[in-house]
Image 1 (cartoon, rainbow, N blue to C red):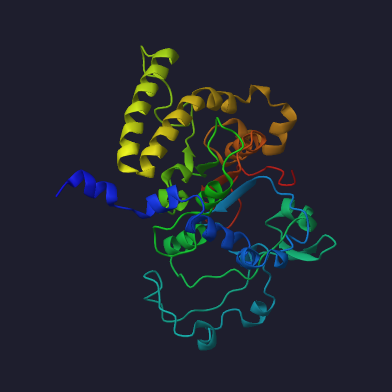
Image 2: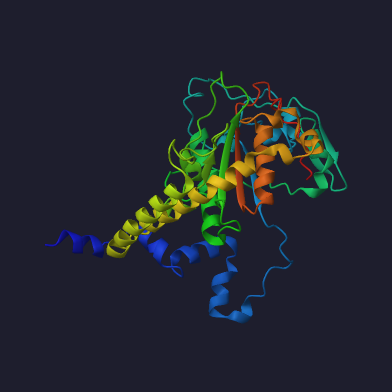
Length: 355
């Protein structure tokens, strides 16, 4: 038995998705974006394309972990006013299991929202007073009120929203889009993630890297997490005594060794390693330019609030998301935690969402 030959014959899920550019990975993404794609393969005349020309070029996904319920934001339930304080009927609960936090409760009283709602814009969309800026642009928004999950705990529900499964291990939505669409900017990743908190001294719902992971797709498609501070990406800067030319020669040598391994084992993760080393080298120039906000006019900071000058805040991350979008990054995801316990918006959110 030759262990080297045995290793060469093995095919992992990563290999299958990474090497087969026309394989099941493309088919899966096609089915997510447009189920009619498979009908078009069988009968090209059956596929007529979208009913309107697409306009979206990039996505900024704001995920408010632990934020106010939709019942306090834009999903007004007037019936709750008349049943406030009464116990949740069995016809609604339908025997659903209890969480650890509620297992000791004898009753499950229903509660109406404590906030006032009003119909906004010409569409008449119901938006609460908690979202005054959103209320002003209600006609520019699409409210989805049909999304639901059977998950009753935070982490499985968040995992489901980001990956389509309550069980960890599936690719995140950003990884799928990065895999299917690639990047417009060769000097920045196609999928970038930033996290923020209002108060570092209070506990908040944990966020795990799998929420922006690549699952069984090659890891080059996972989200690249930007940190706050002067070094957004760890180990991006050259260590003392190493200049750019030395770094370039070192990467060339490592790439040659990795290419030998890639030819021998056909492992897509080796190709990912080569690509990520090269991306890191290019980001040494692109990231400092990105985070230098000296070129931003005062009018921009007035839109995003004074906190946008302070790295690590939600407002600052929103400004960075705008700068990333301007530079061709297709998918930017902002996770914000530790909302005010009384249901109010974080104090650093004063940005104009209409841009």
